[in-house]
Length: 178
Image (cartoon, rainbow, N blue to C red; front, side, top):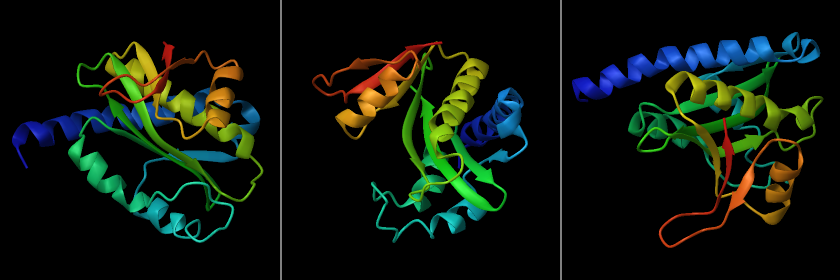
């Protein structure tokens, strides 16, 4: 590993931890008491294994790729949301090449309905917006939403997202000015 890669990884780890802490502080009181924000670490990956065979699961991502993703992109942001010892949500994203936008590339909540299922996207969004702000990004993008239902959900819940269709060489995404 190059020294510059190691430097970026450790420098941005400070931002990642700070973003999770600040986002948790901004949660509504009812959620702040119940939920914990962390990285996508070995504990989260072990908890994810319970999701794999659930028939309600809508994606087939094998979240064990998270460590490779974070190694490849040392400025990446990873988030796991916990209710006690129960994993509620996982997400991964990274800044764009020029650093003007923060990408949210992967997001998944527990396939089984949980007490806070309807809050998971907003919690992740808060953490990604916080990280984006800390690293100086002006926009947040949700890259390649899976279907029209998600596009409608993300654009209709007062989140500030606008849909941008795919162009030659670029995937579709939702964008929000921060």
